[in-house]
Amino acid sequence: CYQSSTYNFLHYFCLYYAGVAELSSIPLGFVDGAKYLPEFRAAFPSFTRGCKYVFAALFLVVRVIVWPLMSYQFLSVGVPMALGSNTDGRTLHSDIAMWTYILSQIFLTPLQFYWFSLIIKMATAQLKAQ
Image (cartoon, rainbow, N blue to C red; front, side, top):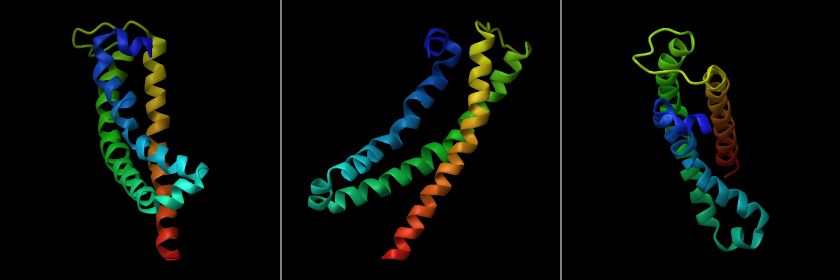
């Protein structure tokens, strides 16, 4: 995280991955909180249900549609830089940090699709139950 905030190269990506990508976690927090406060869930069932829809929509847009585009953009700049070519005048300050981010992208991007498949399965099951 220190590397991301110190060097201008990663600011753009840091804002997305540490900020925008977490937007879907806000309604998810309300949904999870309602699990532990059944009286709240009973008092505000439409709010909890609405949070589920907002979570799914935000997850789709932010993590399934935009995330891969951001990942491609990062990898298309980061990999050549980590390999020592096409730096466009930028200086790589930490090979370890860059390779950590690259490997994280390779792992986390498919994980977004897997998580979304679980969201779809849960939504389908709830629709069938109604």
